[in-house]
Length: 426
Image (cartoon, rainbow, N blue to C red):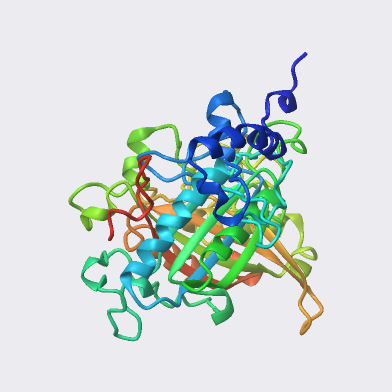
């Protein structure tokens, strides 16, 4: 029986084949590869002759970027970058290089052509050699400070800033920290292997040297496909299912309504893009673990085991906030998380969050762990902001969580082969 691994073309295999095919490429190139006294090993060129369908590879190019409506992978590595270059051409050049490297890495190739020159550093950092692509996706967004910072039009892009890319307001329950907030560029990397995800971010940072630096980063996880007895909504570290209310990502009309920026409603370059909100939410799980199951379910408004609304039996049954208990009180508390997030049901977002743990907080001795909240929406000012405003004021969950990091990014439209992410902006 053919297994999944049998179908997978690993980086090691690619490099091995490239070592054979690369010799012919070198001769055909008229000796270009002899510039440094070695042959150019082209993984890309070799793969073209042997390419075959692979379930571990997701397409990079397309109308929309990857990693937004893509079925959620097991791991995330997110990084916010600050630009240290001085010119718009620096930023444009960075996106050109990042696009080329990202396209290669998602297909299971190295970040760039290797040379084998013993006197130069390798082009790729190498830790993903022998690993499968693991459904790697990279999603790029630009933050408000790329357009204007301290009143300065840094790169001549101020007039292109969409009104929807506004700085998020200060929500009442926020305790934001500079070290977990902001950024000129945000990159979400997701994969079914943590080392593959880290490898991608590391190589982007390496390529960016001299033009951009990492401002902050956060790794995250959810239960893996192998660990789950059956497919279903992942649970957060409080034990409750997270993302039950998401719209159907296979429904194009719903995605156009909730996620994708439409023509004429924003700057033209944002058409087929979206807005990404990231929030680092610390959980006070020591306090949570001492609360009763009844209190926990009243806090979320859902059954912990089934995920169904309180009083219901099915996770996905329609939320009925008018139901009353025997005493005439709402069955689902009006200040429960699900009731406030739902509101009147007219505003929705697409959540794509992960759990995180960063060990122990040295100041408190408690676990530094929580939710790395990620969501995509077409207009944060009409979707995320009003929803979070309600939650920050009266959500029962606020007793057990605190938002310590925050950023907003305009996720660029997808790119066509030969083009690059961000081409519409520059």
